[in-house]
Image (cartoon, rainbow, N blue to C red):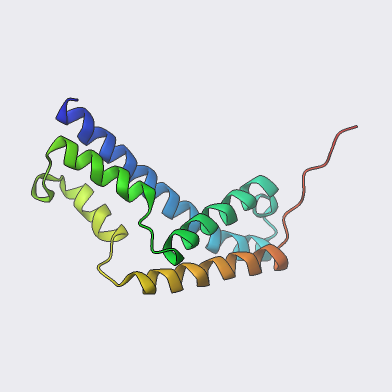
Length: 135
């Protein structure tokens, strides 16, 4: 495959990864704030289920000492393209710096489990509204 195409796919995977992270952080902030401010969207069932579901996947990967599949995909695409870190655009380097920290995996596992615990706590303290069944 063309190296530009592979690099573009790797960039897309990185942007998806960033979007997932922002979605999770947004949920952790918006749910308690939205409960206090009476925002209806923070109780939408599918949104809350997606939020907790993604956090479960993230925490489970960390506890099992697995690298995130998005990280693996991005890395594989960059390797196939023959791209080295020095040729990355500035914005991409900043995003990588924000997402990938050089810390031991156990720290991430503990942090992700704490975040998941907080999300589950929010599920009970700010319960979502379950969808109504139509007759």
